[in-house]
Length: 366
Image (cartoon, rainbow, N blue to C red):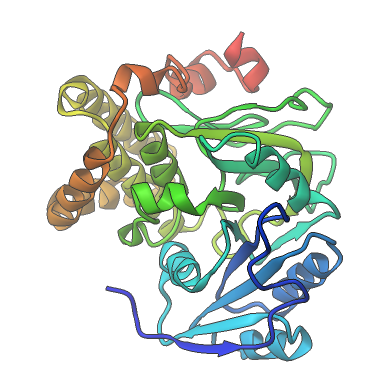
């Protein structure tokens, strides 16, 4: 259930009304926010430098305690501020913003991301070329190390058959340097919620983000549904965004470990057909247990506890939510698992990275 929200609407930016036929489409940029004055102001300042019109910027304040949402709306009067009485997480915050938005396209943007001039026009131009393109991701580089890809998004997301996500330019803990190796437009499996352009009509078909995920992998789950419904997910290297990965939750945070493992399992249970789950699920559970044992032997109790709690939460606490989410996903299916798997990596990224020591997508995809 979505919390009732207080909406403070400032004037729409110049050109913010729906454009006439043939004009550039209205884009609604949705920024879920929870605390952090400096990062939000930095994000909005970068957006103000971009010349794309018409655009509306919607900040969803997830019950911040530092007054940063109100301050940002005062400094940037064109921003629409939605104030939620409680923290809805990334998924709930984005959904709340999209329900208010009027654009033909939505952009989900992290508050710790910094866009570059021209980024939005390039994404929209590519999306307008094919109505089957439902999601687009720009190149996302690290704000701390601009020569390297960002941990959370890199050059577009991929997925192996067991449901383990990785990205072109980042596999597990290894982020590659950007040497132009991913500078072609191409199909990807998922567009990171760090910065993703979504087609409204496609979401009207498959539904919005699954709020039971709270945060992490909800965009991958959405993109999986888009694939099931026959849409495309595409990477656009000509648009560049910089990002501070882990500002909200660092990779080693126990809650992030829990969310990543739980949501990964739920995503597999929702989106695969029953016949595919018969062989995928046992293999996935085995790898989860192997990972828990590995971290236990290393003395990493945070990782071990996070994985075991994720297994327990998935099996014991969420069966109804999983069943409901599965019905939702299977209802939009027009493609078989075999067709969707053509967009996946046909192997195990866990095996390749940890056993065969293949650290880059170039090595993996060869």
